[in-house]
Image (cartoon, rainbow, N blue to C red):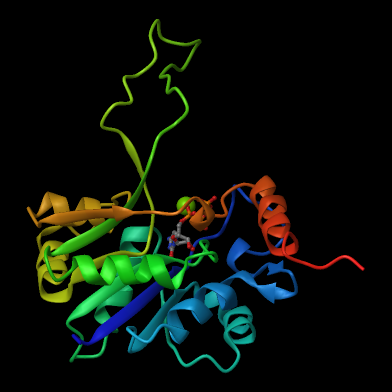
Length: 226
Ligand code: CTP
Ligand code: MG
């Protein structure tokens, strides 16, 4: 098995979610979001080491959330892209593959991680995707006249996986202050091959306040009522 490292990006401020503290430190069913996310990666047999990128202001929250999970904590940057760069710089020297995952996606499954790692045997990078089922419209003041054709459109998730040497070269080519949506975009800009694998609806990103209600529902739906 190739040596595989994982980076969890957790340095955002969670402004759209609100809630007093950054969303990755909020409790879900009594467990911090970041801990839930880190546990899945930490327990996965294919993942050998973990780097968590945080805002230095949150160091205490991060230590409390992670508890006994073994991870290297590094300070992030002003954009997700800058935070990923910081995480890449902290990886162990022997890593061959890297998974990059949003702290705000606590319902990532081991099966999805398997699909991403497996695809890296065929391609330099792997991107979990889901189809777009709602109609899409563009418009700022009122709607445009027609909806956007959604054939060939999909939603991208994380973890995104990469052969580490190829991704490092892709980040080296990127000007310092460039911010990209995700790491697959960085990879494509450098011409890396990308495999798409099936994403998962439950692996949604906690983004808005209402996403926390959905998450609580997922957690309680399996409970026994007596
Ligand atoms: N992230 C990061 N560093 C940043 C910005 C984002 O590590 N400078 C991380 C977030 O912590 C999150 C992931 O990237 O786990 C996806 O970003 P997003 O959902 O946008 O989270 P926030 O930026 O925290 O939220 P918001 O945009 O609402 O402020
Ligand atoms: Mg953000």
